Image (tube, rainbow, N blue to C red):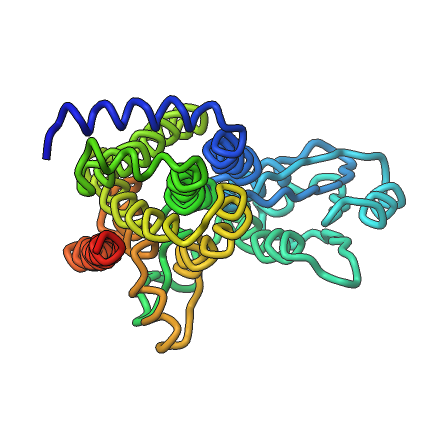
Length: 359
């Protein structure tokens, strides 16, 4: 293989392709989707809860309740005048209402069990239930009571527990999905368009007169990799996603892109025009971009095995570990073996087909 010939072909294809609006759409659409995911989702989902209360005298109960709630709850406290206004607020958009009598804090501290009115809706909400359950512990602390028992919480991972979203958060999980989309769009749409245009313009025969088949394939594969990593850099910069293990992240993207680009080259030989390639290549994207989204679900064993047999699912597993900086998934060696196997199949069939056409 002659590097100079490959470099010349790469430069020609790279510059010619970027002038095609269809290529630009296919390159930048996954980036825009990733930006949307970045702003539409939060890594940690927070629950907003509104508490309306009236107090005949100053009380620390709302502040104590706020401190006792989990960090994922954002408590908005509203003080109103009188029990009737508390009821009106709960009928509106407040989740829970409290009517605190005069001298409540002092009476609780003395163990006198003062009356506290809790106003809730007939149809309970998650936020409402959490506040009501938390109130008991808050009142015990205000009364200086010891807990009736010391509870030790121990968490174990189920045999088929899916920790992906919990470990990454929704934002980073969906941005990883956009990375897989990016590789799929470039490999299965951009590359077939480039190859089909060579056939449409009748320049493929001219290329094979001055360059070997392997050099033409290498140049077009490099174009796919260049577009992939250029778009990836833009996506990571805009979404501010910084993988904790950058080498592992880039290795996973590279392994996936090599295989997908190989299938794109194989697919491009089917179409006679670039219009056909742009129209029909999208159908082949579905099995490429869907498996990563199945990883966050508990699937039946046969379907799970099929998902894990895809290179995009295995690339997502490796990228998830790289982003989190810890082993969310084990056996990453298997992930790279699966991606390498698919890449070998793609290029083996591609060269077999090209050799057969040249005979």
